[in-house]
Image (cartoon, rainbow, N blue to C red; front, top):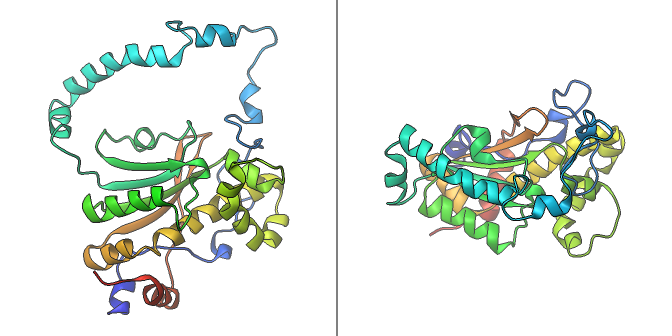
Length: 276
């Protein structure tokens, strides 16, 4: 195995030292406070005026009401389909014959993080797996099956692990409240917190939450690049692996510096690469 040759490929990226991208006052991302599993931040009510009308729960959930997003979505789907077919006449006929996505996206289930929309791409461009806090458990069959299918069979060119600001899962992992079934799911994130506790405690709560978002992405990249299918694709056809953080307050993606050292790459290949 030519480890040096693989290390020289521009596509191979994995975790980097924490110190290389420490979050501090220079960070360009806003870091508002967020409650565990909240879908909004303390800034979301800034423009709210006392006494302003908000639809009641009964009105919002009433089938056919203008406030009901499901009913509105069904109505708008026909317009979207017609407009898309007009602007891209070959898209739907092509998708009907199969898919050839170039990107595998491993992200958070948060409703504010729509990967295809934020990338400005079309249906068929992105193969997706999302879960709470974009956590990648090494033994999780769901994410593992998605990764293997995307890499070995769809032969994607890019694998992306994406976290985001104001993440409720990260906020929960930063706290110590019992959360039932969510506790075992969040365990890897709490372990990342434990390993980096001195660093996180040296930061403000807002900076610490953003740093844990970043550390979680790096941990996910480590899990991805421990999979033999991924290592083989990197070596054989230049598969690229990326770490991103999405700022929900601005809609902007930030790419992490995740180049791996020769020594750590060699150890990863020895420990995880298997032969077909």
